[in-house]
Structure formats: C-alpha cells, structure tokens
Amino acid sequence: MIVSPLCRYAPALGFALVLAGSPIAQAQTTLLNVSYDPTRELYQEFNAAFIKHWKEKTGRSISIRQSHGGSSAQARKVIDGLDADVVTLALAFDVDAIADKGLIAKDWQSRLAKNSSPYTSTLAFLVRKGNPKGIKDWDDLIKPGVAVITPNPKTSGVARWNYLAAWGYALIKSGRDETQAKDFIARLYKNVPVLDTGARGSTTTFIERGIGDVLINWENEILLAGKEFGKDKFETIVPPTSILAEPTVSVVDRVVDKRGTRIVAQAYLEYLYSPEGQAIAGKHYYRPSDPNVAAKFASQFPAVHLFTLADIAGDWRRANQAHFGAGGLFDQIYVK
Image 1 (cartoon, rainbow, N blue to C red):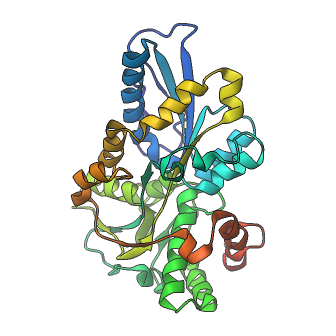
Image 2 (image 1 turned 45 degrees about the vertical axis):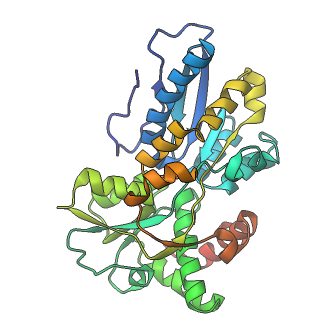
Image 3 (image 1 turned 135 degrees about the vertical axis):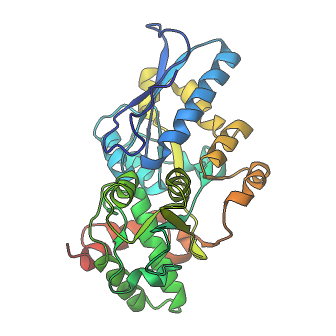
C-alpha cells in the first residue's frame, strides 16, 4: 500500500512511506529517496512499480521512503547527515555539492545514461483565467504591475532554472549583452513579492493563497496544476523559448556501502530508464529520455526552442559562482 500525503499542496508533508503488500519484516531492506518538491506523485507511483518489479525479480520485499523539499535544501540535509540511499534532485549542482563532501563519487554523472538524467523538463507559466495581464513570453514578466511568483534560488532547484531561463532569454535576445541581461533579471525580481523555499510552496502561494499574476515553475507542475484545478480558474502558458532543465539522480555511495543497499539502490535508479519507468515519468508530465517512450507522450508537450545551460552560463559550478553564490548576481540585484 502507499501512505500518501494528506493533501497534494500541504506545506509540510514529511516522509511518505511506500510499502510492499505484506507486513515489513525486520530484515526487510528499506531505501530512502531524497528528492525535490514536485516529484512526490511521480515517485509514489514509481516506487510501487519498482517494489513489484524487485519482488518478481528477486523474491525479496523492500520498502521505500520519500523525502521532499527545495532541491538545494535537500542536498544540505544529506550533507548534514540524512541517510539517503539515493538522491533524485533538480540539478546536477546539488548532487555535486554532496559529492564535494565525499558522500558521492566524483564521477557520479557518468555512471548512468544521459548524464544521469533519466527525464528532462523545462519551465512554464500559470496565469489566472482570462490571462488579465496578457502574459505570453518572458518579456511580459518585467512589465510594471505584474506580480511574479517564483521560489528562492538560494534553496530551490527550479528557482535556479527559472532564473537561468530568464537570463538566457535576455542574453540571447540582446546579442549576448550581459549588462542588458542583468537589467532584465533585476526588473523581473522587482516584480517578485515573495520567495518561497521550493517549487511546491510557490504553487501553494499562487493557487491557494491567491498571490501573484503569474507562476513560473516546472512544466510538469504547471501542467498538473492546470489539469487538477481546471481551465475555469487557470491557464497554462509555455513560452516559445526556454531552457532545457535536466534533473539528475545518483546513489549516495557512503550510505549504500554502510547500509549494504548498493545493489538495490542502483537497480532502483536504473529502473527509471526502463520502459515502465519512462512511461511513469511521461504520465507525470516529465519529458522521457527514451525517444520511443517520448514519442508516445509528444502530444502533451508544447513545442519549445530549448537552449542549454552550457549555451548561456557554462557549467553548473561557473553558473552558481556567478549568479547564486555569496555576492553573486542574485545577491546584487535582489532587494527584499
């Protein structure tokens, strides 16, 4: 059975414990997947599928726990001692931060296909019914009087993707004039009334608290919210140009070796690349990395011209130092 969160948008959901059908024996293996905010529903379904797969393959029962929050905050919890067997985080930089502390091997990104990114995403906008502010693209977010809801890039993975998507849009449009791009970012964040710690918190602020004219968030989060709350209340807008967002996954080497869970933890991540795992990702509005599975879900994803992180900011270490580190560009432009 699956012990689900009480409410999809509850602010604090803690751990969701996913169990096999029979009672847990003392010797039963338990995995902890430390993930970011909007993957709760994805991993509830995926965990149940993997538990069944593992039982059929090995005859062994396992249980899987989930932990969710802002991606960078989740990485900090693992660094501070949370015994995650696997991490499934919003960006490679957060996994690198754990690797820098010796908990994950430095070559982690080469250990699974697609640079350890089993599914991808991009960013989208959610606006109120009728789109009263006429929001269609990134330029509309810097207009006076437009309240933009996006999380804090100091704690949230999607917030960094949001920021870098806006930066990349402005940089490319200006002919790579960084002064103009910086001005664009400063004007955008002047329109941000509140910075939540994570993606799900920003969704709650926009939908349940009724704050803001537009929410920037993961494509899957926006499409799911639009579907769940109905076209009579909200409209989804996917800008024609945005960034390719690549969530990444890894076993936490020090933990799996200590707990003796490496084999099952590795199999768990590899199953994300299986046809079933890829189909579950597509069902939850993540873009599958398997082209055959992606083709089956193509109709639910709008066509977008996607640039990459490398196109506009180098790698994650350079991007973090320039934009999100102490004294970086975000600190320079954001005044509460």
